[in-house]
Length: 113
Image (cartoon, rainbow, N blue to C red):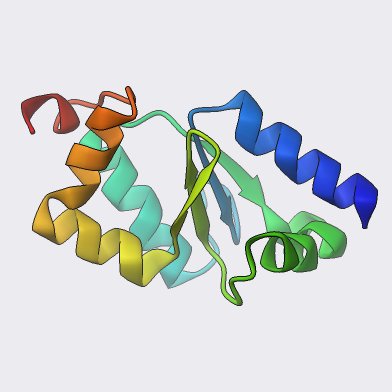
């Protein structure tokens, strides 16, 4: 588990926005992961998608790491933001664009917030 935790820490530290998801950004393999991809794409936010279906240790490890039971999971500047429902609610209220802008992750829509 330590190696999995180290890998997760390295991934979220090396990118501004990381999404642990089912599938890839180009081919999400669940509706919730697809919604998160659509939201981030709409905001013009570059992100790294990590396919948890490729590795069972990462799939369980990210749940243990965040103490959050579901996938996808979104991290911004190393901080866990939430899953699909939270990201969608933040997007709809404008809070996600503000959060990304304040974190220095500027997308086309976030820059207008």
